[in-house]
Length: 296
Image 1 (cartoon, rainbow, N blue to C red):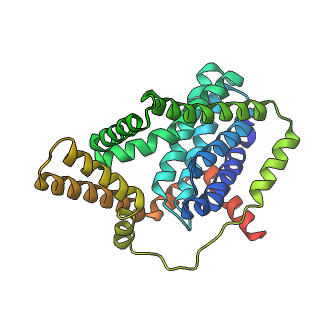
Image 2 (cartoon, helix red, strand yellow; image 1 turned 45 degrees about the horizontal axis):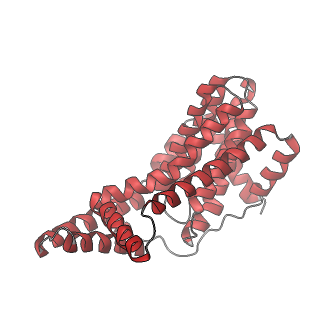
Image 3 (cartoon, rainbow, N blue to C red; image 1 turned 90 degrees about the vertical axis):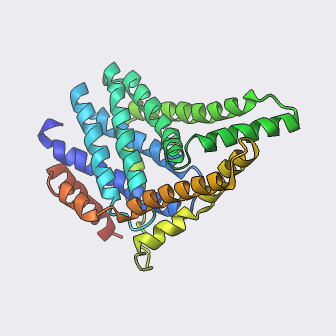
């Protein structure tokens, strides 16, 4: 492993990038539900394949971090969809996965890593929602659920159990897949990786949109408008906020949303390219990605 470490890391980073840039961009552009969760499980699978071939815990940690960070930077070259939020997710999930190896380079370490990785897919959107709307959105959702549960005469704790169940299902499925991958033979890995190599990277024909206009459209997306409506309704009905307070809150939330989405679209790809070409493993990943694309 050590004699060819850059090649090893570069190859798996390229495969991770293919799924993110190809399948991931396609799913996100079509707004397929839970696309990010499927992609995070795929990341766990690829990291498990890669770390299984390392010769020590320290090397496994470095491999996980390197593959994820290179794949995150390659995501900045994605032809479709947003770039910065998936980049953050890929990098953070790789870091969390590597923490699992505190239990050693074994099934327990992989299981803990996938447990931590799986949670981030739920944490990141909550942090984003809190950043834009603050606690008002969460208080509004809580109030809406309490009123709905009273209307339907169901236990209010059911909502919490539903959320916990969804998180646990992903964690359990992810861990089971990770254990299977760790114990699997090389033939299974070959078949799995070949399927990834056959993913078509779709490049849109439309012109690149101005970041200002793109951020404005993102700020008017359904999830932003619904979240803002819930928050404002809660402030008006439950807190008795004045029209000025409602207007001020709406303006603040909309401004934060626009600034955030503008930042996503304005992220300079040149920075990512400069970082990528500084490291041999990253250069290897870039070469592999272009090789896969040229074969199709």
